[in-house]
Length: 208
Image 1 (tube, rainbow, N blue to C red):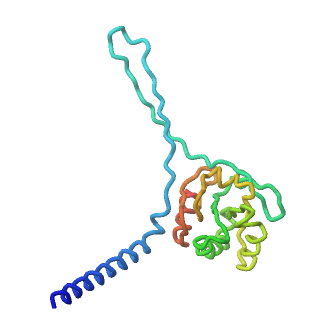
Image 2 (image 1 turned 180 degrees about the vertical axis):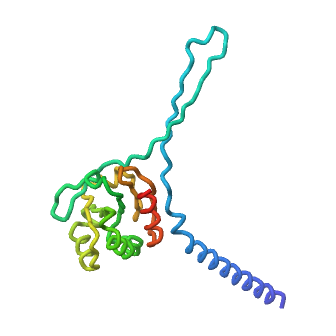
Image 3 (image 1 turned 120 degrees about the vertical axis):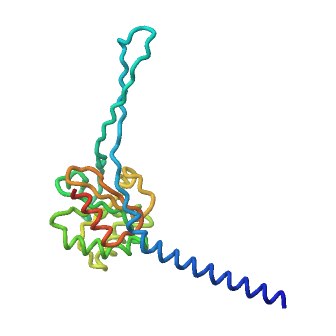
């Protein structure tokens, strides 16, 4: 009888644990998109100057002048479907949504419909650079192009066949998205799949 009572208590505790875990999962699911968007802090350089004319024996004065500079988006070279070189700097003048993706990446595919819809809404004012991680084995120009054609997506797609863009931005996880303003400064980034609201929030940051 005692063993049966203990078993019931263990089962109840397990049910409570599952319920709490499910609640946490729902909470994280509702908040993960907003938490993924990370503003890029300004780079800060410290300039120190020392008064060399201070009298002997007196303490020298040291002052720090903190100057903030915007984070410049580094340039890179990718290729269009015809093999023509395309550089990020070609698009400076309008805000840029820079997205790294692959057709084998489930989270990448889950966000693409939203990217395509926002591109249709805002494509005249925002440059979309959907950069495919084209490693030549797991992903090729052919497989990526076939996926885009089958899905009917209309945003511009470019192919990182030399991994120049991925290495330049240190992208090791897909999808990753950067939001760059018209002057070529990185305003925010997001790791993982994002929804339409988060995408538009990032665009607003790039427009400000």
